[in-house]
Length: 326
Image (cartoon, rainbow, N blue to C red; front, top):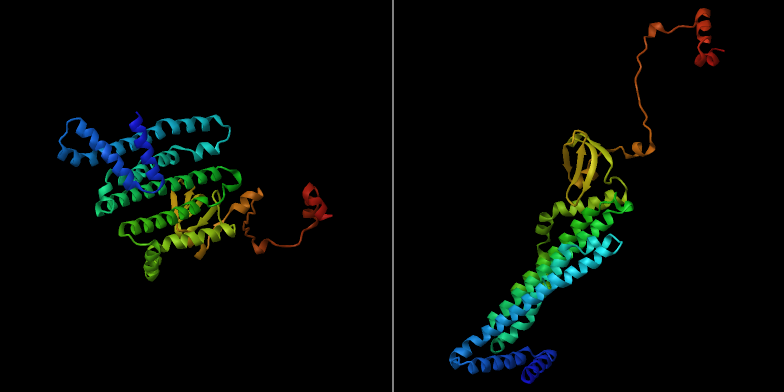
């Protein structure tokens, strides 16, 4: 036990000083010594000691992931259920918490790979493996942030003052920007270049990007205009005969506005068409509690003449017309 404690202390000091290769050499020597003491041939021990350490690291990473998912996450979920607030039930849901736990194992493997292969610390294969771990960590992190955005959207969309706001369009815009930045970083990791270099290159192809994201950009701008000018919100009754829309707005997203017509059919219209074309919003009439009705009455011109005394006497007997006749 004393020797094990000394090895652990030596490895801890090496890792704390930022020297994983030195820590790997210490661990490898101990594993090699243990294999020789078990009667393994020296040549064979030199070949398999790296893989034994790697399997040990993977086992620890999987164990840490299991502990996070089975113990820590369940404990957090239990504490969340005991609170009276509802927002924490949405924020700390399965998708958010599971994505956090999925980052534990690859982070441990990324840190510990140099320990398993200290003599190949600068090799291309080891560098490639670490970059794969980094990409996986980043992908899980992007999913975690996206799930967190969705949870925040669900919290605010359930509140009365935000029910009529186009929050889903803002959510989709934030997610598009998030994954676009994530894709740039992942590509930069693969080609071992700075993200700034890629962004500079993308600046030269701005016209192509504008063409690819044309609908998203126009939808985002149109959504802001519709919301800022209070032209449209979820629950409004609108008519747009040109596109066969006559019903209630049920969803406003980044690229579409969904309208449930009164025959229960769904009409989908791009937001920018609501800015460029005209539409009729009946919400003001609904909120006023009344409706102005216009009706046409046809009168025969030959029937128009002055009232006779007999007609006046007849009209005086009608209570509603009496004041006008007198």
